[in-house]
Image (tube, rainbow, N blue to C red; front, side, top):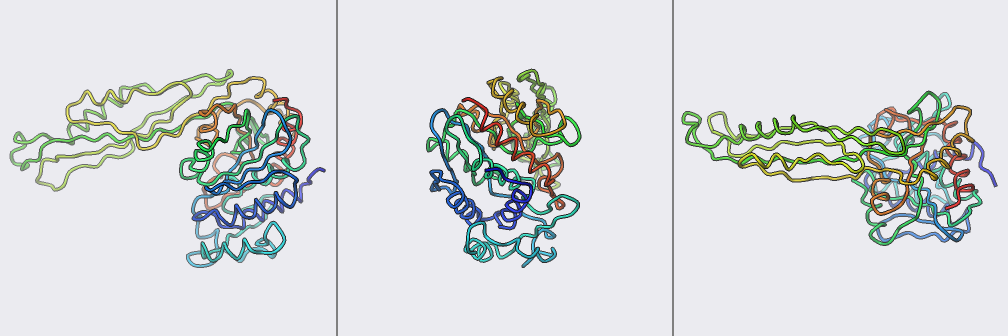
Length: 392
């Protein structure tokens, strides 16, 4: 069986129409129902809401995505707080027979998502990030003739730091290889879908400076927490951002102070000041931010740590690149990605990953979020080809 452009487009439209920014249940229901109806795979829904399907035997290759989205812009919904146009006729139909998921989505989120098509592109929340690539992966999972075990996984909570992926990994989800369908289109050139062999992570930190309050007319009677925080900022400014090379591709990190907050009144020497630091991490390297604790009264704490990803098997990267080359007229390239994805959690747990998907830079999380239907069809061909040809 082979999906055509229309089938990929319609499945994408149906997935995108289901609200999943507050509660992913209805979207997960629809994906699970479709897999049960369209495949003979072993389909499970874990206690976290992740949908996983498996077929075939042997070493495993997974096609991975997520069905949660960020909160939509008002123009992307109809209903309370929404100002978008009415959705196209039929867009809200459930993927399986009946409309149970649609009924649940409206009562849960009290809105309906708008899906529009213009000039060969689908517009709406989640088209790019990442229900379009998810639809392509579902169809490829159905149609591929895998050499080993083929796995499909759609996680919840990716937008909240990989909640679903982390929970699945803790419960034993451990494919040998994975293609994660986050964006890789138009990275190295126009109208081409590339293969990401590494991406940055993110470590968000807080520097807390503590001092002793005093009246501002007698500053020597206290210890100024803002001054200590400024000294810590100077330490951060003197640290070099990390840098790494993965399969010949350079991944450059970054380090920047993004917020500072301190003081309680204009006439009081501040006793507390906090500084937020955003660090984009790279595989194998971390900035030594603990150096700020050399400043009296300064403490460093990590608030979020999303891991980077590095493909550790050139053979798999080559297979994915060959599949991408077969699926398009342009010549795809190995590239790196500046954003963290669930591939970071999977790689950290031992899965060899690449990232390949339809989203283009600047599309995700925007009011005008969109995806090319032609590129969705291309991604379907890439996923089906790598699932069929790669020998895990």
